[in-house]
Image (cartoon, rainbow, N blue to C red; front, side, top):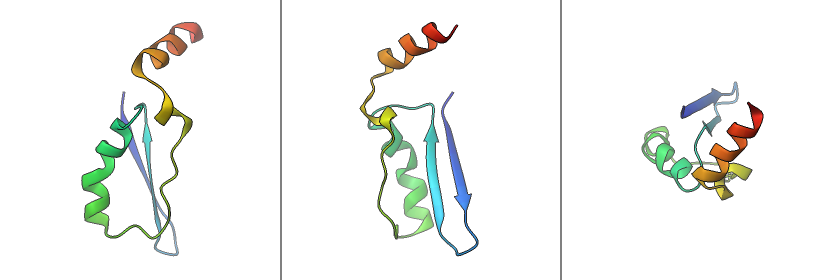
Length: 65
């Protein structure tokens, strides 16, 4: 299941994190949301999942069972 986690910090900064997605899909899922939040002030940090393909994620899930 794909989820978007948004953290709002007391200093007004936000953190947007995608859970359950891989590759460029992560960026695509947050594009509209980031546009509505305004110009990003920090840098985009890509998680290791960005480099994974969907089949690699499915294989990892099967191993965990």
